[in-house]
Amino acid sequence: MQAANDNAGERGRNGASAGASPARPLVQKFGGTSVGDAAAMRAAAELVRAASPQPVLVVLSAMARVTDELLALARLAASGAAQPAEELRLRLMERHRVTAEELFATRVPEDLARDFEEQGAELARLLAALHGGSGKPASARQLDAIAGLGERLSTRVFARYLRHLGAAAELVDAGAVLVTDDAFGAAAPRFERIATLAREHFAPRLAPGRIVVTQGYVGRSEAGEPTTLGRGGSDYSAAIFGAALGASEIQIWTDVEGVLTADPRRVERARPIAQLSAAEAGELAAFGAKVLHPATIHPAVEAGIPVTVRHTRRPSGRFTTITKNGSSGRDVVAIASRGPIHVITASSPRMLQQAGFLARLFEVFARRRVSVDLVATAELSVSLTVEHEAPVRSLAEEIAAFAEVSVAEERAIVAVVGERLKRTRGVCTRVFDALAEMPIELISMGANEINLSVVVERKLEQDVVRRLHAALIESEGGGER
Image (tube, rainbow, N blue to C red; front, top):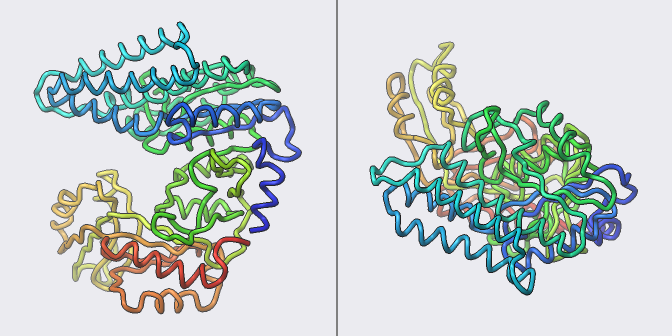
């Protein structure tokens, strides 16, 4: 993997792009596993300090599993289970205190202890507002206010630890910059407003040798209420902030050495990919690669900023660089999969030579704000895939008013991704040869020429991924170029 090793030699040790102007900030985003305990935070802090001869904006996720615990707390409180909710709240706060004690080796600094008290009290207040035992679930607005506390806790610990090490680090609340609409749970950023606020709140504090720490995932509505960008949104935050600041690079620090040719939990011979185009990375993210949030790439690409994906514990190891015009140089770069998903099929004789049927069908999904991934049409039917969480029963009932409907649950999408896919002879033949004994339920060739997807039963997902990886990637030397 010569390209990856060359990259590592230029940037792997201190995390900075070779030749980057010191006036342009570096954005370093650390995910939950990269700040999951005291040891992880120490490693992340060393990476930040090593890069800090240039200005550094650090974007942090909550500690690993904390967001899930906060959402579980909200569910408990809303169900009236006050005592279990309080016990979980105390355990969560204790975890942060123990992490801080390990970091500071003696006792938690007084200012950080006060922060813990304030954050713990705020969480207790938000949970109290959900108590009552009515069984009514928490609203999306309430969930956002609670879920975002994980990032606010982790950044307080991390920023204080950096100062303890002697770094010139300052904590800036992301809510002061990341303004969104009020679509709680999956808020949309107001990019122009963010650019102005980033110049106001971040830029004056970002100078060579200075560090700004802020939260990923969270923001505030124009009315000042807490919002979130949806799960995985810390990557998105990093890209938005980096684009607003004209960053030299946006680094996504995680627990793998870049984007791999397949999920290593499914394919033992999965390998890091040295270079990816933004289009390839976006397709991989959309079809199941868990290293990147699907929306992460767009703000960085539009601003011409490279995104690198790196391993926190192996900073000198291999990594992936993603740019607008970069390329893996391979016909097939990776195999991605996502499941469970559902397949909805609508059939009607009225489809035949009749305008407006598809418009009526997709209007049902648009009205319910349900995203459709793959579509396959025939003369009298159309099949499409939706996420596992989609309200398939309600969708089917509405479609049944004008078409026959069937729903296939517990399915998976497996995608073959590569920028030169459609222009390369024989790829489809190799795919079908590899899956000759497998029942394929739906096939879709992406109009963008870089993804060929099949839908299979969920129980077959892993076998299909392994077969395709062996036939299309391992047979030609894997991802190491």
